[in-house]
Every structure is written in structure tokens, then in C-alpha cells.
Amino acid sequence: MGEPGGRHFVGCAGAVRAVGYYYGILIAFKDYNIFAGNNPIDAIAASEWVGFSWFQKLFNNSQFLTVLRNTLIINFLKIVWVFPIPIMAAIMLNEIRHKVYRKLCQTAIYVPYFFSWVVIYGIFYSLLGTNGIVNSLLSFLGFEKIGFFTDTSVFRSLLVFTEGWKTVGYNTIIFLAAITSIDVGLYEAARVDGANKWQQIWNITLPGMLPTIVMMLILRVGHILDNSFEQILVFYNSIVYEVADVIQTFVYRIGIGQMNFSLSAAMGLFNSIVAFILIVGANAVSKKLLHRSIW
Image 1 (cartoon, helix red, strand yellow):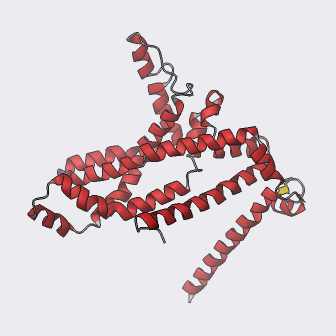
Image 2 (cartoon, rainbow, N blue to C red):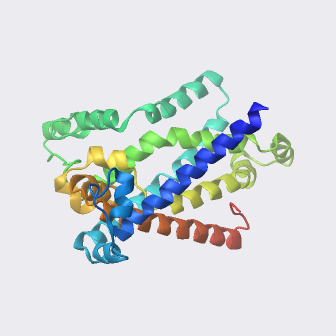
Image 3 (cartoon, rainbow, N blue to C red):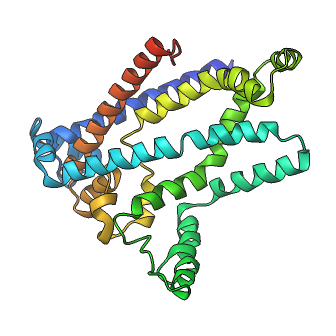
């Protein structure tokens, strides 16, 4: 008797959260003043309606194009360089037959995922900072030091590399699970036909992983305007704003730092709409070209 009631309560709670979320979107269309009501929720209704005024200010903001360009470039680099690595790592781990060595390799690539970005920043700053191990070695050998954290031509590469170092292990688990679902009989039949290891990978493993690869790629494209907020917030500084300031950090600085909640809400809504369009578009392209899609 209690279970249906419990499900009903959970469903109501989810509906309330959804209504609260959509109600909060109104901030993007109002001149929101947090002190206009008795509490922040009442303040939404009490604030003046301004329509698309904040969106006009957003698109006319000189920083908007820079922030949007940085977001797209950084995410594009992460897709190109980071996305394929877990696929290759999963295939290589699957081919390791020595159990102890395989577990050691898995542990080595999984562990960084459990580090916070603050810890990772500390690790890489001790390695790549101005007086870090790498720059000290370069100076000792007579070379100029590299400003990994301050050079605008290098900083994006640092973000991509650290993102890959942290997330490859977690994403590898997903692709390893896809490999385990492949029928072992296919490999046995391929060996009987004389297929070598590379042929087995190309004709059996990769096609078997393709549905998962397509799904992960579509989701990744859909989040092309979402960078790792914690990573960039910890790593960047005012010197590299020109190449590292992205939508989420911009919203954080405007919304929290300057208390301009309406402008940050407009940016967030714009981000969500673009993400929805990209997911639907990527799914349609994949369905047409690869005959595989999420729905």
C-alpha cells in the first residue's frame, strides 16, 4: 500500500521542481530585483517585465562574442583530442590478457577522475608553474620558461590536456561496457577465418561499440556550450580571460559578482536552447548518415 503512495510523492516532488525551474526562467524576461519581494521567489513576480531586453543587451555586449568563441573553440578541441582517447584506451585494455597488469593499468587511468579540480590544479602547477619542475628543468638546460598558466597561446592546450587526464578513465568504463556486450562467438569465427587482431578490432570491436560511440558523441555535441566550469574557474586568471573566459564563467562573474541575475539567466536560457537544437540536429544527422540515433 505504501509503495504507490511513495511513487506518487516522488512524482509530485519532481513536478514541483520542474515548475520551479520554469518559473525561474522568467528572470531572463524581467528586471529582476532580489529585494523586490519578501523572498527571492516573490521577487520574481514583483520585478518589472522587460521582455527580450536582456537578450538584446546580451547579444550587443562586446564580451559575448568573445565568450561564445572561446566556449566553442575549447569544446571543439576537447571533442577532437579527448573524445577518441577513451575509445582507444578501452580497446587496448580489452586486449590485455594479464589480469594483474590490466588491473594496474585500469587503476592508473581511473584514479585521476576522483581528484577534485583544486587538487589537479595543485599537481599541474607544481609541474608546469613558473617555478615548477618542467620550467626549472628548461631553465637549467638553457631554454626559456613556458607560461603554461599565463600564455594565451598555451593555456587552451593545458585545459584540454588536464580534461583528458581527469576524465579518460571514467569514459573508458563506458566503452569497456560496450565491448563486453559484443558476442564472443564473432571473434572465434573471425579467428577461424584467419583474421588477425587488427582486423578483429576494425570489423568486430569498433562496429560493436558504434552505438555507444554515437550516443556519447551526440551528447557531447549537445553540450558544446558547456565547459568544465570548475576546471576553468580554478585554472584561469585575468591574464588569459581573452582565450579562456567561457559562458559559464561569464555567467558566474556577471550573475554573482555583479548581481546581474537577469543577464546571467538570459545567457543560461540561450545556452539551453542552443544545446537542445544541437542534440536534435546531431541525432538527425547520425540517423540519416549512420542509421543510428538516440531516438
